[in-house]
View 1: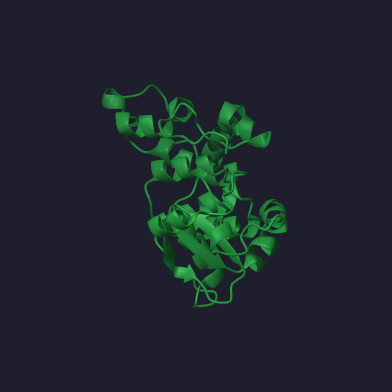
View 2: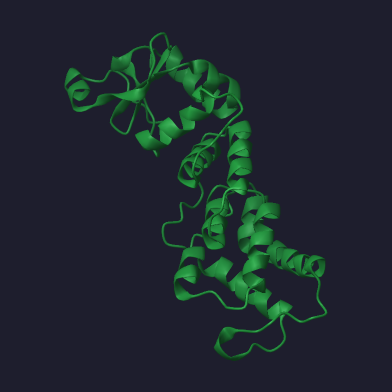
Length: 245
């Protein structure tokens, strides 16, 4: 969402854009322009689910924005595909069944976080927890969208426990701060590392003790400190990191 909205779209703009095939709904009461596509949906969901979006939408509707296609409210920082995935949560034809791939849930998580939809964000996290994905990808996603550290800590522990260290691509994806945290965790859990960066975990350490050690490291992490202060836990040293939304 952005404070920049587009009211009074010219007729020429209408010719260069199209209506969403899925979500241009007869009888719906608010119009959005997202990534070159027009959406006509029900304001009820946006007014009910997010205080932040409710304020944004109410302000625009009061000024006459969003009442028809010519005054459609423009949403920035989001693609039409992402918005369609987000709307699916509200218009899902199978009540209570949310069967979607990781890519869809990532889009939903992104917008729920960006626009402060807490219930939708919680749903996205629950569904993502059920799906398989590489640990490094899950960590970066959860960091980007301020998922609670309690869900990230066990994933970092798995990286620390595995026989081999982070490779270059993994370290680059995680960013310097998180990669250093993983290296520190591996050192903390192990004796002197073996050749090639491989070293088994000491036989005397159990899972609970290992998790406690990683939790201590996480609490010292600048990224976690940022999240505790209300910002995203997003490693800004990582290429493509969105930083604080």
